[in-house]
Image 1: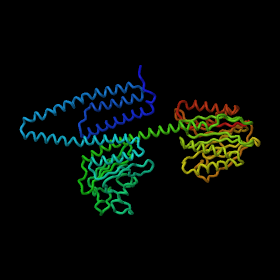
Image 2: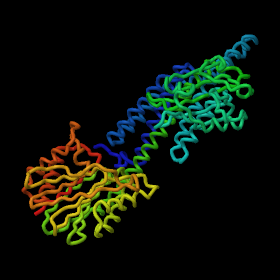
Image 3: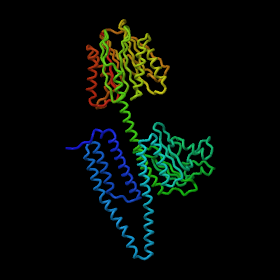
Image 4: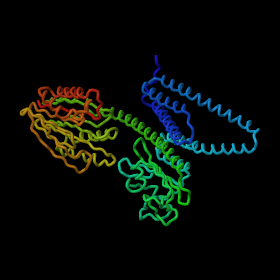
Length: 560
């Protein structure tokens, strides 16, 4: 009988803790691998094996939901590290005995031995320093999780750490914009002679030049920073004056080019920015060792940045999920629990929500004897903002549909009310059908792309009578057009959202408007409620267990 962890293993603090354990183990594995490749220190094989055990154990714990893999992981990790600890103990014992043995030797060999020891120590210290700095990146990344400006603080700490290890005079971290082909400075400190042409309106004063660089952004084709982003290759420039890719803003001494190291920041195979280091012209240029050390530290900086990105994505998804759950419960209250019993009409509806809120809303409002209003709206986006737009549309519509204004005027008023809310960057597609039972005709208007189908019982044909127009909320002065149509007994009006036609099955095929038309045409003799039920069943059979990403709403109006 296996002991299983609580359900929080798949969502919540425990899952995040296991993910952080996996991330830290990954950092340490990359660190040991890089330092071994760069030959900074000797890394025992047992340390690699113990970290691999942590990877596998963490994954099995998360996927199986059982605590047994976690216990086995800890046991195997300790067993693998026993030889390493024993080796450290033997090494310490030998070191403690060494001075006693050296007392009987002559003075000259002792001096030679001390020089060898000092030389070996001097070779190991830089590697140990890199390990310490890399470890600090990991710690700083974990602290950045809970801070609002955590990423900016982490970038500053990474920049300062690499400057210290490479003895650079200044450094900068530049990140690529997610939407534009530009790279912008996100962290800057120290003396950094700009390797690009300064704008003509920037005076050659230290404070003005530093301020310009601190807030600068460049096209990827503009200078050396963008070139490194596009090539993905690190650059060691020992003499900036001799490199044609760099521009010197002389004659001021602080603008003279020195030595530079520019390394791309990569998350997997994507370059997200660069780390740039500089030494002024009067200092010794960067060495190959400085270049390699900077690359090792940059690798771990990328890991630290990636962990922050990953954590932010997890938190953002959790926030959106929680927000969507709250909004989803509120959204249900906006839909009519039962369709009203309207003389001369047979009504049916079908509504199926995807995860959270995608914004489908429908309503039936018997406002007057000569006006029954049918509304179907599809609000763009998810979450609380979509719900706010939906509530606003519902409130405005319920206030004005009982007036004598036409369908197009009502939509224009709704559009103006939404578009004037400049703080809400959302829009909606909306279809309004007003049925006049006294004249047996419909008046309709549409905003956006919400379709309206009309089945003519006399011709036994079904056509789309709506046209694509400007959505609600885009431009406050948009006007819409009224359309009128006489209807007869047996005619059917079908209003539906895009989520119906765009529903997909396991093969990736869409349900399509034609399949909806076929179901309605084949069952035209049934009531509106029965037709809506058949549409619901057919969509469910077509999609199977495939998760849909948009709400599905159908409103059937059959004239009796």
